[in-house]
Each structure stands twice: as C-alpha cells, then as structure tokens.
Picture 1 (cartoon, one colour):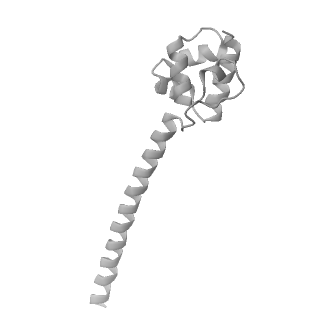
Picture 2 (picture 1 turned 180 degrees about the vertical axis):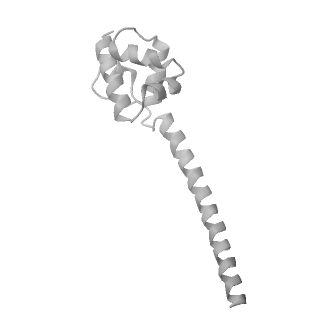
Picture 3 (picture 1 turned 90 degrees about the horizontal axis):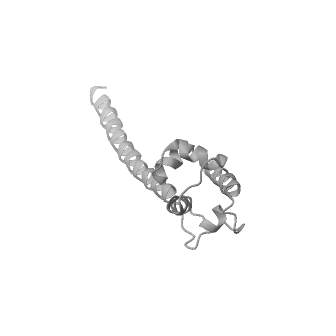
Length: 118
C-alpha cells in the first residue's frame, strides 16, 4: 500500500469537500490527530478505517489507495455527511417558513390594530 498516495488523496478530498481534519475525524469516528498522521504518511490506517473514510467521502477505496484515478464509488450517492447537511438545511428552511408565517400574522395584527385607533 502506497501511503504517500493515500495521504495526498485524503487531504485533497477533505479540503475539496471543505472539511477540517476534526470534522472528518468525527465523521469516521477516530481522533483528529490520526487524520493528520494519515495525511502526512506517519501512520497507516486500518482497512476498516480506509473503508469508512471511502464510504463517508463517497469515493472508492481503490481511489484512496492510488489503485485507480477514478474516485467514483460503486453507488454514486452523495457522501453521508452531505446528506446530513442537506437534511438539516431542509429542516431549517421549514423553520424559517414557519417563522415567516408568524411574523406575517403579527404584522397583520399590528397593522390592523393601528387602523382601529386611527
């Protein structure tokens, strides 16, 4: 296993997805210093960790290991962390919509109240 290639690709993927080492470590369930050590080639991840990283970043293990230049995983799905962020965004949009409705009602009540007195 060529760990220099693994470290380079891991760092490139992580940065291209806008993830910090801490965020990636949380997603994979390992300590943040290990991500740094993997990227620098100081330590070798276990096969299980490689699989987890590939799954979370939605790339093939072969790509991470430098066996192919095609990062496409077999499923072609969004990475799990992006699915989670999209879900949170959708929930936030619903809350904003409800808040807009409440504010609109409050504004109508205030406008209605000023007409009664004027």
